[in-house]
Amino acid sequence: MSQARHILVVAHTGRQDAVLAAFETCEQLLTFGIVPVMTADELSECRAQASTDAQKSSISAVRELASECPLADVELAMVLGGDGTILKAAEIVREAQTPLMGINLGHVGFLAESERDGLRDAVARAAAKDYLVKERLTLDVSVVVANEVVFKTWALNEATVEKSARERMLEVVVEVDSRPLSSFGCDGIVMSTPTGSTAYAFSAGGPVVWPSVQALLLVPLSAHALFARPLVINPNSSLAVEVLQRSAGRGVLWCDGRRTFELALGSRVEVKKSDKPVRLARLHQGPFTDRLVRKFGLPVDGWRGPASA
Image (cartoon, rainbow, N blue to C red; front, side, top):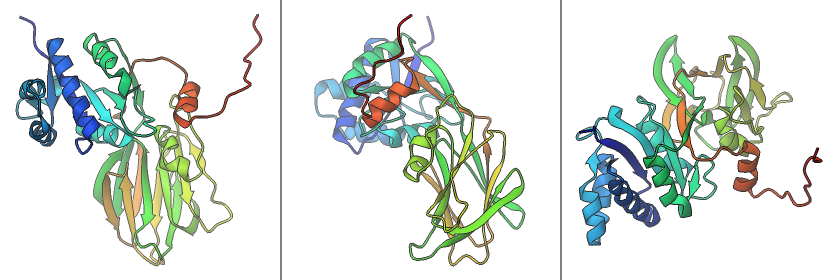
């Protein structure tokens, strides 16, 4: 008898539409002979919200991640929600690098592969293993105080050094490849991946970078300086931001808006490309240009295209 297949279902259980999508996904996976898996917290919440016989039956067959199904046995994670839910799922599967297939139930949902009305087709494609896996660059992030590493984490979108008090400016010095670049007062610094170029870095005025481009981005936030432009840097370079002793207040490190660490004066945040990418399961092979147009609703009326041969 063949070994059972397991697919992790990650949902924004604080939203009713995501919980309903989770019930539907689990039910459909079971019809394909695939065992659905959930984290303990999400499974408990879905069990509490199951109201119909079909929902209760499908959720009773779900296995709990870790205690009943090790992460290593999960072949794919289906993520039901917006980009925030996908970032949460990326954190859950980080060590195993399980591919993520996002179903957008949020607003823009830039990382998602399908919309809500394509859920059943996405589950069928997942069951048939009819998808491509694309790797996305991630960041290793360290905080150093007095030459000692006091905190280590990672990021898919960005690592951001920000001021902790709204009324106080953060004084920093920026470093690239172990050489000082510039010092200035600012609200913060965003160090981003190409994936994150359409997230916080984009809102701060940074460039959109195609995911196929290997690069690091550095985008100052409201800097009081003549030279404070967004920078695109070699992916093998190292970046660092030091919170200067003359700063009016402490800083705070945020990674993907999920992991945080308070930065005392003199703290140094070091960022480099990680050797662990995030793997995204893709159902479509269309160009990134089309995704930009679709997600941002960009006007393309009047385009005629290249002349035919």
